[in-house]
Length: 172
Image 1: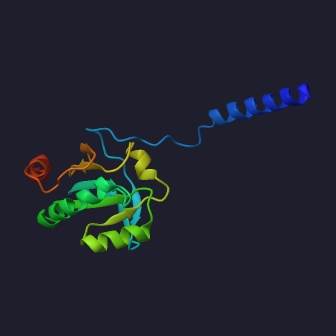
Image 2: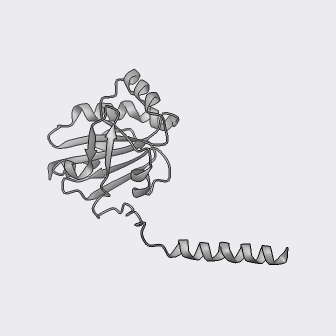
Image 3: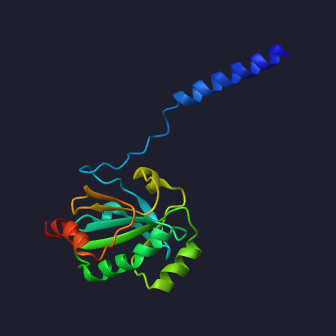
C-alpha cells in the first residue's frame, strides 16, 4: 500500500511540475492607468462584434456590471443620461455584462430604457484583462487608446464631477 501511495504522489508531483512549466498559455495583460487599455473583441446582445481598438479616436467609457448587483442597477439610469448628452462622434459608452444571463440583462435594459451597447463576456476574458475585483467598475479610455481613469464602485455619472472628469479627454 505504501508503494502505491508513494507512486501516486510521485506521479502527481511530476504532473504538477510539468503543468507549471507549460508556457503555451499567454498570461493576460492586466489594465494599468497610463498604459494602452487591454483590447477585447466581444459580441453585444444583438450579435454585433465590438473591438475596443476599433473605437480609437473616441473617448470610450467601459462599464462592467450585472443585473444581480444593486449598485450596478442604481447607476445605469445616470449612465443613460450621460450617454444621451455626450457627442457620439467623440464618445462611446459600452457596458460589459459580468457573470450574468443575457436574457435577464436584455429585459432589464429594456425596462429602464438603457440604450448603450451591452457586450457579453461569457469566458470572462475582458473581466480578467481589466483585473476586476467586482462590479460595478468603470474605465475611461482616451482617444489614443490609453487607459486614463478607473472608478471602482458606483458613481453618479450625470453629476458635474463625472462630467468634469471626462471633459479633458473629450476636448483633446
